[in-house]
Structure formats: C-alpha cells, structure tokens
Length: 196
Length: 196
Image (cartoon, rainbow over all chains, first blue to last red; front, top):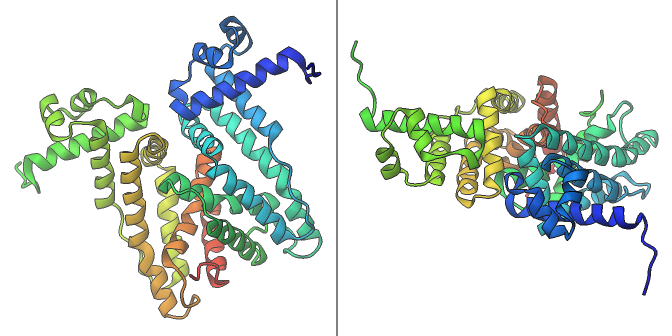
C-alpha cells in the first residue's frame, strides 16, 4: 500500500531524528546524546545527520521546536475554571507520562549547562503559555477576573506547583494536586494578585 | 593564634570536602564530580576521602545533609504575611545567589538520574518545609487561615512559582516575583484551597 506522506523523505528523516534524540535524552541525559548514536537509532545515515544538524545542541533544539509544533491546542469551554482544569490536566498527564515527563525533566536539567537548550526550552514554555493565555484574557473580558490581570501569570501559576513537586521531590502530579493547582491559581487571580 | 575548633580535624575535613563537592557540582554538574578531584580541591588525602565517602553519591548526600544542618531558621514575627515574606525572601536570595542557586539547580538536575541524590534532595526540602510549617500552623491557631489548612502546602506554594520560573525559563527570581508568590499563597490559603 502506498500513501502520500506529507513532506516526503525530509520530513520522515526529521521525525526519526527528533524521536531518536528524545529517546537518547530520556535514557542518558544531554551528556549521553551522541549524533552517531542518534543516526543509528533513527536508521538515518550519519552523514545526513551531521550535515543537517551538525551539533547535539542543534538536534535538541529541533526536538524542542517539534514539541512546540505538535503540542495540544488550548481548551475553549467558555468557562475559566474548566479551561484551567484542562490546562492543568495537560500538564499533569504530560509530566506523569513516562516518556514526556522524563524528556521535560532531562531538558530542564540540560538547560542549566547549555544555553542553546535553555533558549529552546524558553521558546517551548513561552509558546505553551501564549497558546493558553486567551482562556484567561477572555475570562477578564467576561468580568470573571479583575481588569488588568496578566493572563500569562495565571497560566504559569497553574503549572508551577506541579513542576515544583516533580523537580524537588520526584513526585508525579496526582489528580488532587492538579485540582489544587487550579483552585489556587483561580483564588489568587480573583484576589487580584496577577493584576499588573 | 590558636582557636578551639568545634569538632576538630574530622569536622574540618568534612567541611572542606562538602565545600569542594559543592564547587565541583556548580562547575560541572554531577557527571563531572570526581572524588580524586574533590580531595585535591579540599586539600585532603585521596585515601581519606575514599575511605570516608567511597562514592560521589555519598559525598553529595553529605553536602545536602550539611545544607539541612546549616540552613536558616524560620521567621517568627507573629504575622503570617511577614513570616511568608521572610520565607519567600530566603528562597529568592538563595536561588539568586550565584553559588547556592547553581548548586540547587545542579542537584535538581542530578536527582533526575541518581536516586541517592534524589533522596537527599527530598530530605532537604522536607526539612525546609518542616522548619517553616509552624508559621502557618500558628496562623491557623490565631484564626487567620481556615481550620484544617495543611501548613506544608502553604509553605510549598510560596516556593513553587520562584523555582518554576528559574527551572523552566532560567529567570532569577525578582522581588516582585517574591511578593507575588506570597500574595498568591496567602489568597489561596485564605480561600481554603489547602484545607485537607
């Protein structure tokens, strides 16, 4: 059976390499990623990988850009609490996912020592926050939150406690923690804490 | 001049090794810590270091235990907001300190791949939370917060946004972020979010 593949060979190579870089990061952390090993895992010629990416940092940046492109669109239920719960559930399930969660914590660990990874990670989180900001902006327009509330701060407030427990305690976020994160962000936002 | 040194030679060796492990971690991350290098930095015989600690993980655990022992006692102003601000300022100044901040992020990065470091780090954060819990428990007794509020959750809520921005965005916490973290934790606590 023949199927048209969007993007053709180049896109397939990119997808395989991105997958292989992620696998290597999850298994070994940034220090253990090696382009020759990535090429082997991806089933792609070493020359292709070196020519196209050149460095581990470039391949990792490609992986993060792919995470931005393929990440889940925001909710739009028309109710702030429901939207924030959908956001919190996305964060919870991502962090609790054996591959995604370990990939994010590996990238966070790598960003500390590698400025290019740090920049890619900032682009990822900025893109995620931007995607979900309208949920909060629309709630401000509806009068559910004080005028002047910074939507980005509210979105980040939902994520912060879930990341904090995982990174400092190694605790995968529970559904109770998810609901508490939403309730806390909402209570603070309603009290005007995020008005700028 | 001769001074009595508490603990004598053993304590001095321990202090020098703990300092050297911290320096190596800050410079190279866990993967770059080597006991022979630690001994050299500490001006202590390699045999002493190997005999007493044996592994990098044991030396790192000693460093974290030292962080627990030497960490700053809690505030006791009699006012919850002032106490939480003192806690937030301690977190802010620690994360913003070039050595302490990089040490904590290096440990958090290392904990991902090393269970012994992860356990030591959990002991550190648990000890810090336990130290500050009475500020919240006393506020509950004074009727400033709803009965049944979990003090640990309130203390962690103050830290979470400061760690989150640093770890995902590489942003050192500002005084504005500190004050927002306190205001958010207070608003959520007053709304009963942390009642268990």
